[in-house]
Length: 132
Image (cartoon, rainbow, N blue to C red; front, side):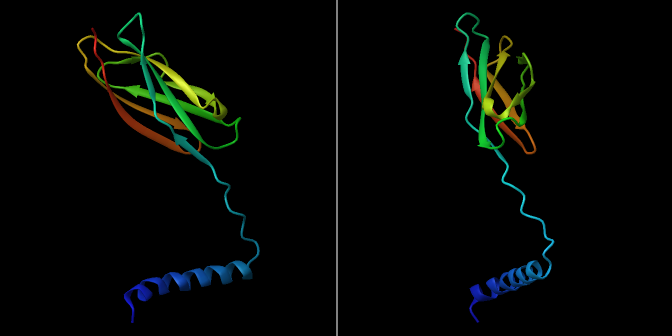
């Protein structure tokens, strides 16, 4: 017997059993609607007047109700300070900008960003600070 066929046969029997169960019992609820929140790349810009201040734009996209509440989060290590680490937004804003102030003598900043609705995503990124 073909090894691929041996692998596929159990899945075939399971799908037939589920299909026959669904037709026999009509009270199976509808599928859960698609609900997805996707992270986009961050945009990091340095302040012109204060070289230790950065603006980090946390962006998202996805398939949600435009009025759904979303919590944008940012956490940076190495002693960096953030103006607000958790901000309540609505999904259709698609972004939140955080102010990060880097301490003296720090070159590499490691940050973790995320957005929370029903799902959660957390992404880590690093950027280099150069004070000229």
